[in-house]
Amino acid sequence: MQTQLTKIPSAVRKLGIPSVVEISEQIIAEEGAVLIAEALSDAGKNNLLEFTSGRVGFLTEGDILPVVLGKRRALREYSGDIPEQLAVGDTLYYLCESGVVGEIRGLNEQWGTPMQVKILGSLLHNGQPVNLKHSALPSHTTLEQSAPIIGVVGTCMNIGKTTAICKIIKHFKAQGLQVAGVKLSGVASTQDLDTIADAGASPVLGFMDAGLPSTCGDPQAVVEAAIGVLRAVNTFKPDLIIAEFGDGILGEYNVGHILQSPEIQQHISSFIVGAGDLVGAWGAQEIMHQYGVPVTVITGPAVNNDTGVQYVETHFHVPAESNQHAMPKTLQLIEKNLATVKARQAQFVAVKS
Image (cartoon, rainbow, N blue to C red; front, side, top):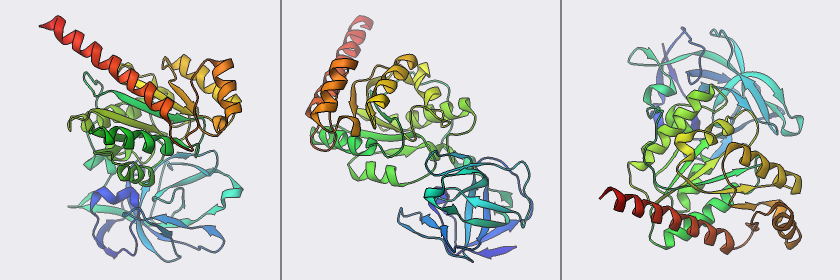
């Protein structure tokens, strides 16, 4: 059966889905499955829709669109799961403006009630059900070589990670270096990746390119997807890689599992942490220490003035700097760490020769 689509969300933008699609009543309820759905009532609902272009518009009752089965565990927004079984006519919740859908598990009423969609069937390509994983980057278990990785994580969402990342990218691009950008955790969205690309990073890839609608699933699969993304950007021979970790240090997006991967950890040159307050700054340092990843700089609202900076540096013994303006301290520390990496690599080459 053929169906005309009215809108296409960003979660499927790499699939090149046409406006007229073939659908099947047979549905496989698994992570990454691409289904066709009809939007139900939008009255009083959160109906934001992120298009494949990255533009944010609205989902309207009666819209026909592809959606992706996935999990979400947002503390400030929605939490949802993949249903064990799914049939044509069943209803699911629109968990994320990018097109991720699932059963509702919890919601933050301040964010509004999510829209529901009615499942019409599964998307077919050459007669087979489509899954994001079918056209994804391959997962890997090893990362023998990599450009130095500069990681950026926060204690929660919307803490200034992307702001700091853009400043770092622009600084090193101005020096003539090639900077790759990756997003290794979170829920599918193009906004951060597009912002990173606008700052000058190239290539820019995320866990979505590895076939994951979010990183709330199996920890090992998430780690292997992250390694796959890093291997992919390394094929472009960048001088360094900026890695953003969506959500927060703690939570169900498997940030801890990624950071504790020896394959990834061995290539981390610097790590920037955004914190919302002093308790968060202290906790972040403690947790990152447990992960085996030293914190290079604390930034974010906790240190947006001299009071926070002095407290963090005096009591936590970690450099701190606001990201509201230029970040000379942060950039100098990153450059110092990169120089150390280069010296170590040169020494290794000399020993081998």
